[in-house]
Structure formats: structure tokens, C-alpha cells
Length: 210
Image (cartoon, rainbow, N blue to C red; front, side):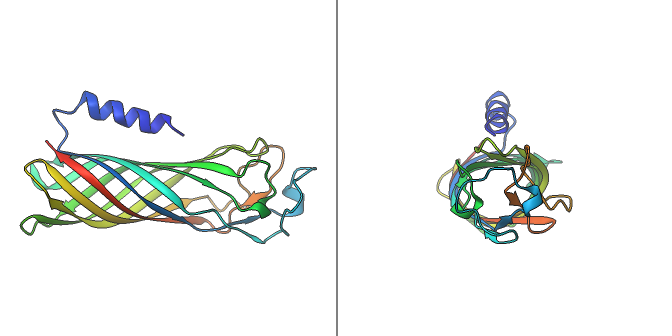
């Protein structure tokens, strides 16, 4: 899903005079497993090599790209509210039986953050809530949009008056409403293992502070 990222870029550009922090970062996204759907949920014809029902379907770890725009909250210099977008292109393992295993994963969150400055170093903690957009490329599967959240911790290091280096780690759970099957479009080959699907990120990036 590229629309949420485009909207956030436009917002950042149009409100640059009001933005406190604009951060671009890149990192690694770890994805937990899905599973092979039960036979009753599978389409009549699936690709050879599909795993047995209930078997784990790994989702590859991949690069994650992030944009964050944060604003001072209630004139408190160490408090922020903002918007966060994360994008990853990953793929299902071959045992999912898909002709096209690629999937785009986008998270769009409203966030709240607290800084704890120590000279040039600014440790922080944050939390957010919003939506996760899961967009498989295979024609037998459909997109899923689910509630997702995040908790994160990290630090900024001041490189200059306006430029800072950021490191952070994030846990991003997505809530699948107790559904045992997902991405269904005339049948499923992939199911979610539990109510909560977990992803984790480790990132490094640059921040510009207005």
C-alpha cells in the first residue's frame, strides 16, 4: 500500500513550518510465521509443493523503510505526537503454494513520544496505534487491513543544530480479530496462527529538526 506513504509525504511538505521532527530511516523487519490453511479453506487448485495444513509458512525478513513526522505537544519540548509510516516488501515461503509469493506490508500509526535529553543524546520511548495493510501479490489472495500498534525505544544523537542521527527498535503487533483464515479470495492457502501477528524492527536514520 503506497497511498498512506504518499499522503504522509504530502502532509509533511505542506505543514513543514509546523513540523518539529521529520525522520527518514531504514532497517530490518523480522516477521513471524503464518501457517498453511486447512484443506477446506484452500482453492480447488493450488501450486505444487503446498505444505500440510497447520504447517508454518515463514514470511521472510526484509528491509523496512520508515517516515515519521512529529510535532511538539502542548508546548512541552520533550513531548511529541505524530504520524509514522513503515513499508516492507517481503515474501511467503514456497510451502504456501503461491504462484507469486511477494507481499507488501505497510503500517500507518498515530504516535506519542517522550524524550529524556542527556546532552547531545536524546533517549526516547514511544507508542502508537493505527492500521496494518497486508497486500499479497498472488491473484488468489486479497488484501487485509487490520488494527495494528507499536511500542518502541531508541535514541537520537545530535550531529548539528538541525540534524540528528536516530537509532530505534520497535515491536509491531497486528490484531487479526481471532480469524483463522486470512487473505481469502475464493479460497485460502495461508492462515494466521493466533489473534496477534508480531513483527519487530531495528532501524537507523536521519532526522531534521525545524
